[in-house]
Length: 375
Image (cartoon, rainbow, N blue to C red; front, side, top):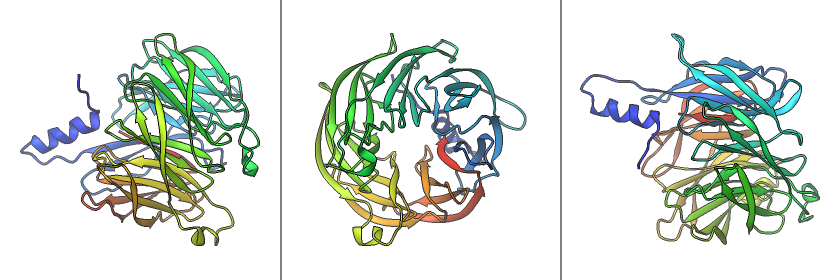
């Protein structure tokens, strides 16, 4: 059965309505451990003109870095510190006259240091987290109301490639699932591999299945599936590049193809410190975007519709410092870029034909933003 997000439904209703309709997408902002940050913030994005409202605090929690939304329930999840423990927390999204608010349902300790990323499977039964510092993957089960039941597994990652100074031990950095919900994927920066697990969503458990390999020293950080389900794109933090994989959904196998630089090496040579941070694919499947810290840009790529290979379109300045994260709204018309060091979120228009970005002159203050979730 086909499903669609509340944001897409609202946009379609607006398009069909004879009355004027301006839809505001909800924007949830996860933040880091900076003294300016108090927790999770919320603002709105006007999908007609791309303007952002002023973010407001909706949940007090220390360093609620990455956020995730339940696929069917009005629940939001974050990794952060609660009760002085690195944890995964669940909030219920409640309506109010002033907009959605968050009510804490519960939290469960990770038990192996802080998590750097989390994801919820399509059935809404399982959460997987990646622990960069301790080098592990954790699994949690969910109750029917969206609260967290318990941690069901803790899987240590073994060995590392040792090619770069930050690769002397395993460093899982992201978690996600295949479109058919049969497999879970955890890119490990320290191993130069994307670890693949077979998922049992009913028992909230993972079983080792295999791995996809990037070039030595590249340092895989995040990844995304193309809408066709046949291609995977892995963002390499160290090399500031993207590796294209052919994906066999039946067997859960990743076959590596070309790796494309997001920024020329001669430009990176001018930076004292640089690294890639986030990767997104446009809803139309024609364009891919990656963020470049240090260079402070987002690279736009064109995706060849027959081969999946990438070609650089442009590199757009994010109008901020250290773009830790960015995201596209459900319509694909707008891109929001978070400047971690500049404490900003800036809005860009996305050309639907060329994939190019244009600064929308809408920029708001958000303390230490490191995750942008739009719905």
